[in-house]
View 1 (cartoon, helix red, strand yellow):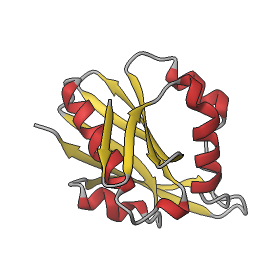
View 2: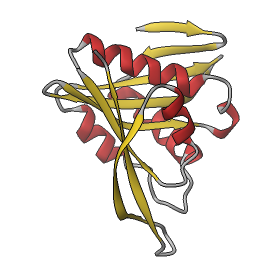
View 3: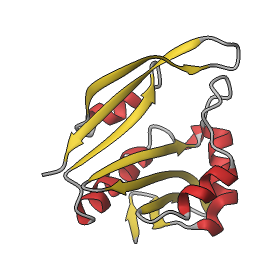
View 4: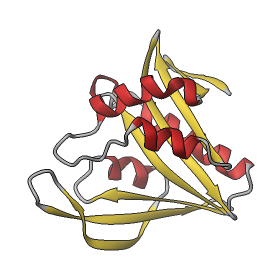
Length: 158
C-alpha cells in the first residue's frame, strides 16, 4: 500500500517502524492520560495474525499512524496517533479511511474503536460514520488519578 493524498503519503508499516511510531505516540498523545503504548506492546500486537499498521508521511517525515486488527468478521482500530503539527490537515481522516478500506477487504462487517471521553478525535470518528454504541464509566485513569469514561464507537461496513 502506498497512497498519496494531498501532500501526505500512506504506506503499510511493520516492526521496523516501531521507533517512528513510538515518537509519534510521544508527540501525539497527551501525557496526562498515559495512553501511549510501549514499544514492547506494539511489537507484541504486530506479531499477531490479523494486525496491520498504516503510516502517514508528509514529505520526509512520518507524522501519523493507525494500528488495527481483525477478529472473526470484526475489525478494531487499536491506535490512531497524529503529531500535533500535522493535525487538521486531513491526515487522520486519510488514515482512518485506509483502515476502513483494509478492514472491508479483509472481510470485516463492522469496525469498532474505544476512545477516552473528551478526546478531540471523537469528531473525526463521527465524521467518518462511526456511532457511539457504549460507554465504560471511569475506565481510564489519568496520571493525577482522575477518572475518565471510555466511549465505544462502531461503524457497519456492509
